[in-house]
Length: 322
Image (cartoon, rainbow, N blue to C red; front, side, top):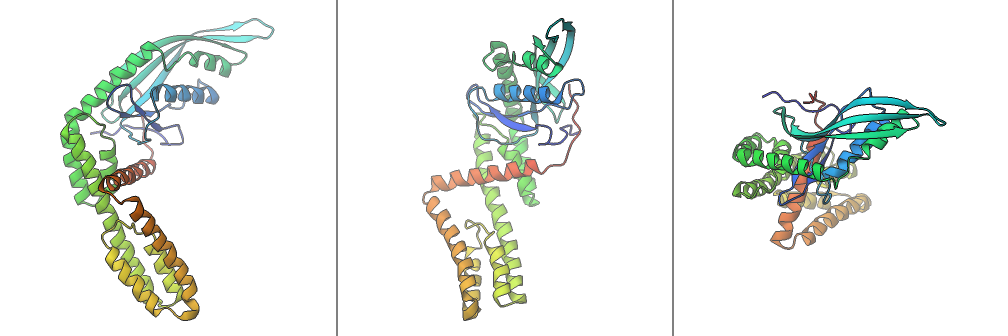
């Protein structure tokens, strides 16, 4: 399947918001391609207007999901110069709002607005027209609701296949991508969503376990190479990156004990400082996760952070507008 997405993920205003007009939140990206006909400041203003309507009810978690986008096509229907002073530019624009699936290149919903903008220059004329895209406009609200229904329908039809695909990614230790795909699944009112949420936490745990073991390996190697203050500091730099929730904490504690027993008295102060930093972090996380519900909540949030980081580090893509 041809993947048709966007140019310059964050550089061109590729942000993810949540539509929350009714029960299920769905992740929707606001994207405005560069347009040589529209001044840059006016294009940014239009993007801001789209962001406002995408967050009509609330600004939910910023889970960046690159599949479904909200964009706009702008056509100039009429342009006139109004005599002054001051001389002004009057433009009648056709603004077509669109939501669709950028991966399968399918348009889900669209609506067209006609707006007139008058300003002392071209930028201001465009901005005045774009101000007429209002988040409380019934036509816009119906358009977004229709689009949301199509997105929810997509996940209802594909949730099981997404879940199966993610299990394969996890087996290949492609944890970040697996978490990212699960984080994009909205609450669609099925048991598949619940399984995706559980899988997201489980895969996050597998990720921190794998990362922790690798970091522990590096720490052991650093200490084995130089069993002095330099080696202790290098080992500590690796150890502090290991999540306290990783399953190698017992081995981490043993290595810390070995280093503490070996370190010379005149070097002990620096090592003890590193050790206090690590112990403080472990204690803070343990206190924050005293009950199972809080541990699950933190796991979901940590997994979402992984998903966001994964999305932000994706390469640039070519995007074809409908």
